[in-house]
Image (tube, rainbow, N blue to C red; front, side):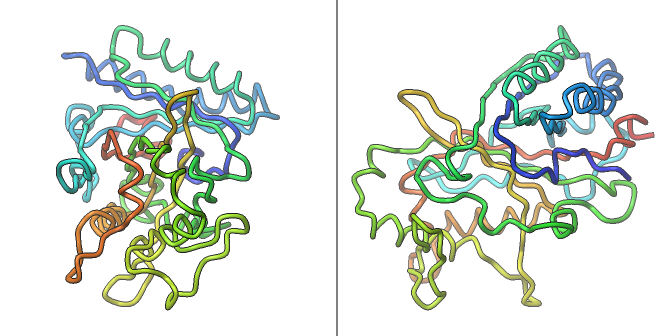
Length: 302
């Protein structure tokens, strides 16, 4: 099965993220519209070859059963964490579109094409423009996605390999809002301790030198057999003159890896440790999706 190109795409300069809820009673019409999405992605790619465009549509956990007769085995609700000020909430959405390109105008054209495709059938609940910041850094100043798989391993991590949902991916999306004023008051040494790697040259600390609260320690996990629990991150920063953050996107062949990472970040271990980066950035949204293969979309799951 051919995967949607946006799942394993290499980093781009620009992105638009669109989040929709399907209007009541419009599921069958939306399902028909989604059949045309792979052709739309190909048309944009061919029309603007220099833009390196890639598209991705993913269907939300709560919307799936209203669109398709068969359900991905592991698709479930977003694994909300914590409470109060340091929490990762669940905010379900029916459809998620990731539209990326090396030309902002092409990403915008793609957004307008999606809006026209779903006109009167789905309500736009949120939109966000992402962009590359310096050499693929987060707005905190640290390189983002350093643990990402490379080459052919990207597909091995991100895509379901077998069965009726082969070529698809479990996608989790969060919009983080950074507390930049608080973060910028920290010394360079304190910031590096929170991440577990150097800021300027992006060198990861040795495991023995990492604090048990370091972000790289809390998110580098292994399963019972000792295998790394990897995800493919497709995240990009967002920002304005007054607010900054990250659209965090996880693509994986199983939702288990993301769930374990989020739990490790927010839940305290036996010694009371948690990821201290969560003190300086707050996820305002959190939703679980499945991004089916192009063939699944074209056949409407039949």
